[in-house]
Image (cartoon, rainbow, N blue to C red; front, side):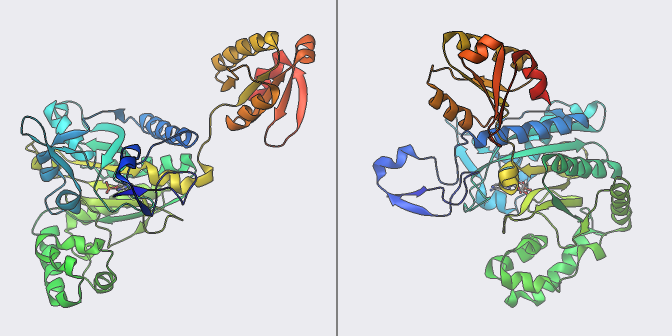
Length: 440
Ligand code: AMP
């Protein structure tokens, strides 16, 4: 018997909360738990989001980069950090036939920084601005908005400590959400840098507080006191959350340099009308973060409401064996963005679907479709020589707003019947006016 998912909660995205027991013989016909297939029509929205993101980032000078889906395990162990849940509990690690330990990437940043160092991009003009998109893999407990294979879109800016880079990265993220039609709240914090006068000093203060309150913490969180005290702020356990309300805050303990940096970032955000909420308990899940950290939060998603997050990682390149190379970036969760958009997510880009009756009309439709596509208008037609009813059904299914109906009388008059598939109204227009009409 195996666990099998069934999608029961959303038409717009796959996923499932329940599982049912099924016979072994059916196992091979299901995607693994926590994964899903992306099928039309939902696949249109996903492709549109990916395009919009990469276009938005390109307009801000972020060049596309692709890195392998798997890396040497050490890249993540050293990059993401041995104290993170991602590394200790969630990685898909395997030994290949030559005995090497490899890991399916759980996130994009460590691999991108590895690539930058390997190819010496840091010896060229700085900052290096990069954007990428692709699947990530984490063995988490699946639920709505949390999958074992999920897609992230990511930008990284490496090689500048200037607050303006932080502000640019955050602003570009907010611009993407605005263009996508998704309203998000920006939560922002500074977690300082790895130094006794800053984060390391704060860790001691926090450690003392946690030890004094150890018995009130959830058992899993007690273990973090010595290894990674900051992560206690991330705990979802009610007992721990209650204790952390009284914890000393990092914002009261960061050093003067980090404080000045952070306030410059906030001023720059204000100068481009990006509103934010200071969240002194925001620490994020990966170990590498320093200074500015932030999260994009969407409404209506329940507990998995972060649609993206990021921050500075000024020590990451050195953890990977490189020289000093500062950086900042974010990763957005495509699956959660689509869930949050719901019905607002983009549909099929086909604007008009031709319904043609008779051979002459079919040939005319074939030519018209080609010229509309040439003009940048999404157009499609029946390729199966179906009857009127079947073609109208296909027109509906195509997601097109309009059906262009070509019968004998329309052909004779050089006209086309244009039917609004949403409003139900129709009118006859000259065939040569069709492109102009649809462009409107
Ligand atoms: P992280 O890499 O953990 O900082 O996550 C960045 C964003 O990726 C989050 O805000 C989520 O939107 C998305 N994300 C992270 N983990 C998952 C997951 N298991 N399933 C779906 N989306 C995820």
